[in-house]
Length: 441
Image (cartoon, rainbow, N blue to C red; front, side, top):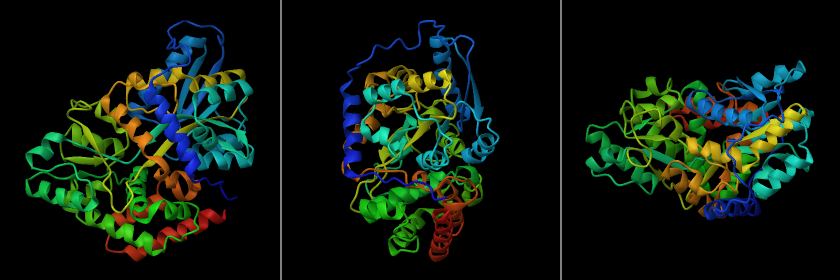
């Protein structure tokens, strides 16, 4: 069955801008008790929440769960889905033993489950909380056929590169503004004895490679072609795809620019790619969204000083702004499940999470003062300025078989291209073959 598809329209992105603008305004419409008052409304109620987060992201989210427990008296357990969320949830849904709440990394997965009748529509009080705190952009993204099923619990800004400022300064390199300048900067760093990049190319984490592609493609091919490719109205064998892959090859074709070379890059997970730069100091730069701050916090580097960001350099006429997010859905319609969804839609949850770090909230009533690091405040402003050219992560909008499955689909096709960047045609043929199969199902 074909998964529902969504591409961000100008009106929708304008809604995002309004949401971010409200966030930057800092006004809170709801009283924030931060979960500080002991509650008992759900005493004795057990809730299971499943998400893909591990490591620091999981630890941070567990603090949000603790705040909910303190606020309501409920007992919340956390289940890790692993990288393949659908592979974990599918059998549990089929066995009629799903978790109460699942947090999905791809809106395409929400569409897939909604079409199968696996999701519970949110109750009116939860929808009212969403309406009070989110722009129509985020509400629509978590809806299907006019019915609201989810809450965008966490936003991501994916058009940045993290770097160690002292290393660039010592080499006489300024943060690059174009992709060609990024290539030149990498060469200068290499000549200065500093490896330019760490790359997360492990099978489980090669979603990072799709993000590299999306930033380059959006910048070069423009928003309209991005929309068409996202809906598979343009084939992956299109010349615009070839151009983007050739551009990526300027960096991916230089294994000496990757910490540990290609052999290490193809085994490196995302968390490792970040800590290799800011903990082990094996390279100067790493691609990663705002959420990389959570990994940096585990090292001795300080976000905003030792770890800074620059916008993903333009590869064409458009400054890329690729957005992401995690959407919470209810698989049971119990009181506990709906109360937890209402909590996620409230400013309380966002403020608790924002204080911890490695997080951006799409909730317009979570102001910039809630954030613990200056980079998060900087990125909220970037989300506001993105305007009509911003687009949601293409792979996350795709059917999960193509855009969200480790070891197959787009993930593995681009991982293969990382290993052989001279074979542009072969990569295109593989991408198109995988896309065609996924969009037919």
